[in-house]
Image 1: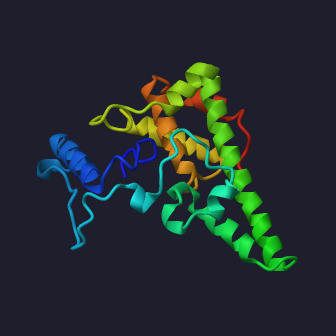
Image 2: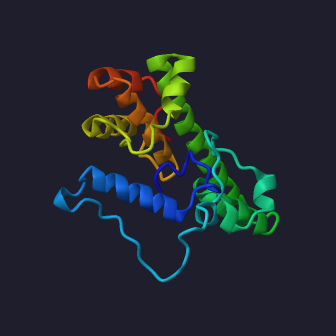
Length: 209
């Protein structure tokens, strides 16, 4: 879903997403002479349901690296944010395992491992922005959202190259880590297109676990 990680999912609808993306891609002739390939399928009348009904409530600019145990303990899987589904599964598995069991220990170890990985990728991207633009400007660049109708990035070759360089140093981006692709795209949009300079800066980041 386009920009669903930064928009209010309670205010946006499935139909709203479909219409915006279809109109934009059709206007830009994204798929040759045929325009948009965005189509509606199925018999369920869900067009006007809020996105939060399917993807959880958004948490704009908030790290999902840490487990909010109070939130998880009172949530059903239906209301868990998409970025937190893996943590919710591991947390539930840990909570339901018998006290003192090997299963509980393994779930605890895995939960801590996932949290550590998420924290590391969050910190690496944050540090990357600070090194390139400074502390305040870096945060602004990484979290900026382009106006509706504009593509994620102006130079797709730059984005693909930078993601590849980042992954070579920091490890392959997981589904959680892919939320940072927008930040890397913003670096390209801000005029940082020198591959050698980007590689030099990325080389100072913590290696992937």
